[in-house]
Length: 102
Length: 411
Ligand SMILES: Cc1cc2nc3c(=O)[nH]c(=O)nc-3n(C[C@H](O)[C@H](O)[C@H](O)COP(=O)(O)OP(=O)(O)OC[C@H]3O[C@@H](n4cnc5c(N)ncnc54)[C@H](O)[C@@H]3O)c2cc1C
Image (tube, rainbow over all chains, first blue to last red; front, side, top):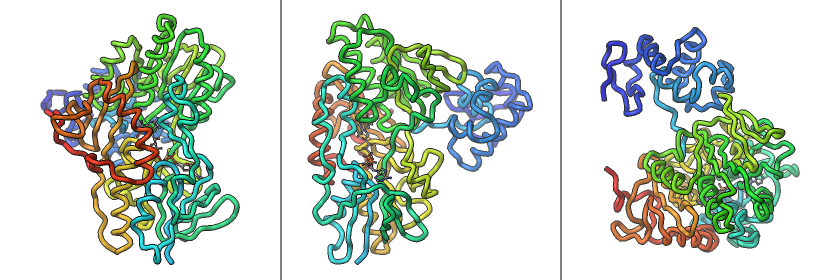
């Protein structure tokens, strides 16, 4: 389905995750962050960029991996993206919600 | 004489030894299977032991009983694999040379990954039921427990048999009802997932059951530590959940041997092609069961379906033919829901569990994703099937290695 985010029409799934990363840009990230009541700081951007790189390299994401990434520890990850950080951060980053496999 | 070596004589390794002992040319191939244990455990039984439904003798048999005569059982601990030299180094210093290697060393719990989990309360008020010792200690605790807060908890995914903790919560509900003390026990199910299960349709059905049985659910909980003094679990977001008994499924990991061999990912699972079961790095190494990193359930039923396909692929490999990309992630699991009933789910990499009938479309007799007594009989029969059919590598009639879509209600 289509959704207007930051004035642009983008393709999203039923949970609101972008289905085409090519449509993502910083203004979309800002608006998705605002929906989650987060205002993005340079630290947020570092983490988002890291997540996008991992996604492009087809590395499956997990809380454990992020904690060991050296980019951010799990405590801080929770402070930056409260409650369910992996789900929130991937949504803002415009990449798929990690499938925590069966 | 060529040498095929199987590491691990658990569910998956034993099945492979049986399949291959019929298939490989006896004059050309020698089969060896290595394990450090004397006993083969029926791990699904660990779920029933705490509730006195099974006794230890239902769960434990000798490893030797299930190894085919023409395979050599080597007892000992594996130190590491040297994949570039086609060698396995044993703890006792001996070496095994192989032409083809099958890794089936499984997965096990690693409570030390979580701060405070293996603390002073371990096996006093903090338990696991993924080991025989843990399950037995929990049985002894539950026998005369007077009630309080029971917390059933998953540390992180993936875990073996991902429905087992839910089943534990359902069986606990039933157990305390029968003891006429359900009103004295508050049951809470705590999961790092966003809901009861990973697949939407099954999650819906299971959450409905949790509600019906008055079991609270706390989702999106990523544990940071266990506080042994206050008896609480605390997550990274600062959420605190108190317990009188914590039944946790600690982080699951592959064996350290995989790490020592430099062949694993961050949880010691071996990177494996998900459709052929060949190692991603070494053409003459194959991986099945819980030891691989493929995105399928870590379950005995999955290992069974894998073994049928892997047997063909080993023969293809030996004959220099292309491998079949056939494994579809097929899993088939009974979910005990208490009070003599169970659910059944059947799914694969691409198709989530849905309602329908199994194994015969429109007939059953088993019902998918619906509670029934027949499904419960199926779960109990699974133990007999495990010892007498699965381990021997016999094909289960009417149930194919790849999933069938007929009789299922996809929309
Ligand atoms: C509580 C619980 C409930 C379950 N319920 C179900 C269910 O209902 N249905 C279902 O299908 N599955 C169920 N499972 C999962 C099932 O038991 C496993 O998926 C299955 O046993 C995996 O087989 P495997 O051969 O890969 O590993 P295992 O059977 O664990 O075998 C691994 C073997 O390798 C040996 N080994 C490992 N490292 C070394 C070493 N360094 N040196 C020597 N030997 C070594 C071990 O001794 C062991 O014998 C359940 C599991 C648990 C824990």
